[in-house]
Image (cartoon, rainbow, N blue to C red):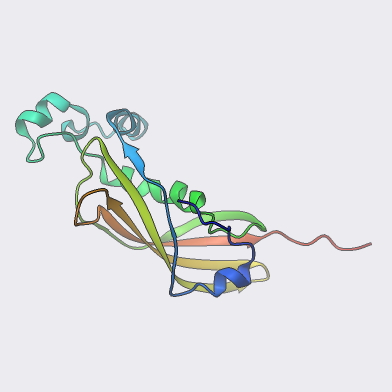
Length: 163
């Protein structure tokens, strides 16, 4: 669920440090998504892409999403939330400080993300390094799928000089 009112300014975002800044809508992780990720990455391990074998041999009795597929949802879900200030020119992944894969995401599950803004550091005029804790929850499950501390560099749109 995106915010009722998107974050408009960097000062507004700075005031959210230490707080939950958003919760995404639920996203279905179906076999088609898992297969597409496998095709894209070349990771075609049977536990992800062979439903029949997974039913017989997996401890989960079904296929599961790749951990990195679940992690890759972070970027799209953060954009959906409306937490990137409207006057942002560009946003770049800067890195990960910590990632923990806690529970597998079974095919057919729905996941969503909760994000807490941990810090916001000035890195130069109009440049900000954000650190966020992102938790991917699995609908109906007590344990999260993953928790990832992400780093994102944001560049504020420059104001045009008056002639």
